[in-house]
Image 1: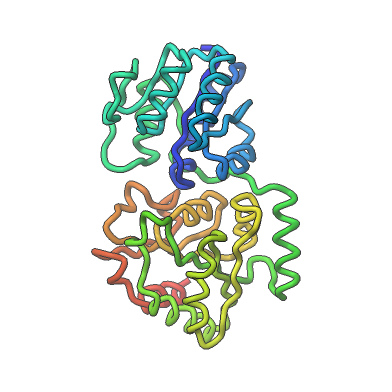
Image 2 (image 1 turned 135 degrees about the horizontal axis):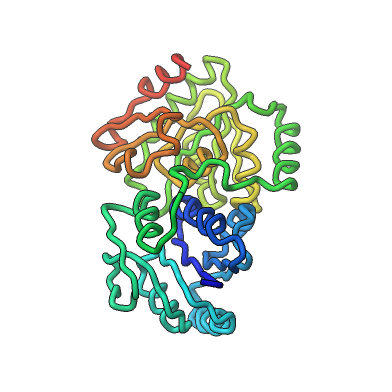
Length: 313
């Protein structure tokens, strides 16, 4: 094996679940060339890990996908790991002329794979470790903490924002109230967030609500109902600046989401709110460091569930 390419999934949390495998590949084969394929919004974070030699950007545009295939073919790569089960990822790897293609047997086009690993439940680090072992990669770390690094400039941008808003590093709680557009069923009731924020302010806690640019209006619809409006942080520069900001926080509160996993990966302790999904499989890592609140659905979680955990810290 002299070259390997990893096809990562599209969501932030799923990318983080694949990084321990990427790290293990680098440690086991320090002299090979490693490539990664990711969505544009994840490329900066992946680059910060300094584990891959070249990043290919995966875009939805058909003509850019054809160019991607041509660009990968030029590298004469002989091995691919496919964390993604999407048909387009498997077809891309096949069309790139990659001889050895390792992925999950649950993939709909698994006949395009030359090596198939078992998979249980949703995408997770446990499943990715199983894929790695099936492909001969050993000593995969069982959590993602410390692999992603916030950039120097992102840290400076965060420091400026904190100074402009009269906040000190580690002296504020970050809250993520949203989820990706496809996973709104994970969200708490808005009134629970309003009550929680009000109670945190009564406890003299500084609160900042974080989210993506496209979530800002939704976030505002919650914060305007608070007795005292918290600060909102939705960086223009996306996940790289978000990582730099999260690293400055003292604590994270939020639902099972990419931002929760990003916080945990940066070493920030979390109160993680779970409904139907299993924190044992996809909880913040390492699980024992964090506080898990789990009910049948997130709609069953009430403000006091969160506040009592804050009081016990």
